[in-house]
Length: 265
Image 1 (cartoon, helix red, strand yellow):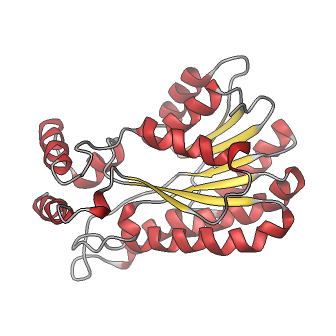
Image 2 (image 1 turned 45 degrees about the horizontal axis):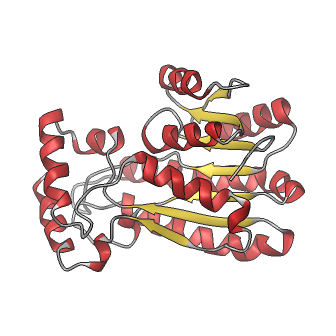
């Protein structure tokens, strides 16, 4: 899984899963463009990824047309090509139908669905030229039914189907499209959405692990390894898949335990 001279764009690369993905691609020799809304986090990620060549840092809000267009323009101006697009950027919300409002709905959908659709649309011609591929970062929340999961779960269900739809559309053009669906993963993203203190979050993760058949939650590196594998030539006939990295949580009746923990927080 060598990505030497391959150009890889990773969105939401300032922290968590996105940063882990960028780091692993850098280790495998990729030429990186990394995107995040937080300039400070992005700079730290670029520092960590800097090997033979420092990544291109793009500060952009991908929920906007301007942010997507800026990302495309700067990536292609710097590298002239794109081999792998990793749509990782996302925002969350913890609410339900009776307590949410359209501002929250729009914020989540504009980043998690509209932004992914728009950026992919704009970069598809470049990926067709290189016979490249796309990896979308979804979530097991896209197939889980939990009170409090609106509207985030809806966006991930949409992303799963988007993956399948464009995989079919782009396959004759030589472009593969897959998604990785993480389970409970250690991430600042989750802690921010839930508003937990560090102590509460540690307790939450320990309790969640009790409902996972393999007995532990995911680390960002687990997700990164699957992303890099799917993007590699080792998977040259894999397209339209949504691969779970969740420790088997959906296989077990103990997943009901996770539902209960989710309700409590």
